[in-house]
Length: 401
Ligand SMILES: CCCCCCCC/C=C\CCCCCCCC(=O)SCCNC(=O)CCNC(=O)[C@H](O)C(C)(C)COP(=O)(O)OP(=O)(O)OC[C@H]1O[C@@H](n2cnc3c(N)ncnc32)[C@H](O)[C@@H]1OP(=O)(O)O
Ligand SMILES: CCCCCCCCCCCCCCCC(=O)OC[C@@H](O)COP(=O)(O)O
Image: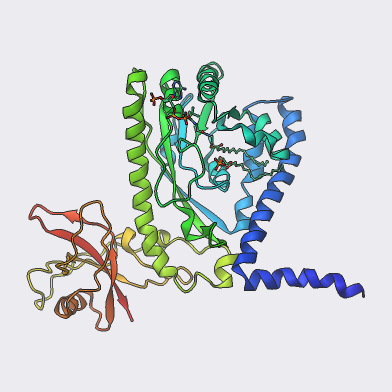
């Protein structure tokens, strides 16, 4: 009888091992539950530290939230730290995919920085209370006039108390393959306070987190901090162009990362549904695996090649390295060549769709370039550049069978 309670204890690891859907719900519940507990812990600490609502409480929240990623199997890879080395107040803007964004936000949160959030969050139990104690500015999204006056007040507070504000200009969570159009509030805020804007781009979570498919694997989030955009001297007439400029910069960074993720995702196919990919910490990111490779001098083009295939590059282009996510072993060798596919019309911004229709002779030529005899050219163009000659230049990934 006494051993009956062991059953659920054994059942949980078994279900974790066998079912991706179970892992999804388990991780989600754990996340919400653990955040509630952490907030409960943080409340007395914040009260002791500052006696009430104060942006300085964000230091405590930041420390407490930082370890949560380890339980969920998430890794954060941050680039552009130098852009946060800005004195005084500023507005950080970032894309917003899920409540998991809080984990990335806490990875890079500068001192004296708090957020703008929807007012409903204040009712989220202990989390709501900790948000209030952390100085989060709550707005009513349904009443634009109210939200505007709260944000105008925030602009003044930013200057008076040297506070930085983090805004999600999409205004809601978004898991689409592109950013939503930006709301204007963040830009009014920065212009009213005459402070710079620092854009931060979170890479798409789709590699490890799919709400509809109920998948929550382990994975890496890349956070890219972009250079600040100055607003000194700008007036309300400049809001639209400032908003468009920020959107364009962030969208370009998001899309660029998404293209690379597509390649990486191919490399992890197969591993994707393994228990290991759901439960264990993700392996070192492919870019890291590729980095230590020294640049190799260009080899002379083999005589076999037609003039249409002038150069072969060994794999030193980080962005195009396809690597087995678990072993770190290179899976493909990218070669650069003029696209051999006459049907592949690729504009400078689009992603190449296919090279599968590559003719046998082109294939043979590329095989000669890449030094592989048995293989296939994968549909993979990581960069499309229009050269002076009007040719498109592609990076083709060459996969051994
Ligand atoms: C240890 C403890 C453990 C604890 C665990 C937990 C810890 C957690 C801690 C911390 C985590 C915190 C995480 C928080 C996450 C929360 C995320 C969210 O909640 S995202 C939703 C709310 N965010 C927003 O909505 C963005 C801000 N929104 C805006 O800025 C909008 O612009 C808004 C609401 C002000 C108005 O939105 P509109 O839908 O009406 O659309 P529009 O186009 O932007 O504005 C309409 C017109 O008003 C003008 N306007 C907007 N703002 C203005 C302003 N401030 N002044 C003057 N005009 C303004 C615009 O220019 C536009 O006019 P014209 O079309 O250009 O003529
Ligand atoms: C009373 C019980 C309520 C339980 C809720 C607790 C949730 C704890 C999880 C961690 C909290 C992190 C806060 C992130 C908040 C967040 O991400 O809110 C979503 C909004 O940005 C956008 O909302 P929407 O427009 O609805 O997509």
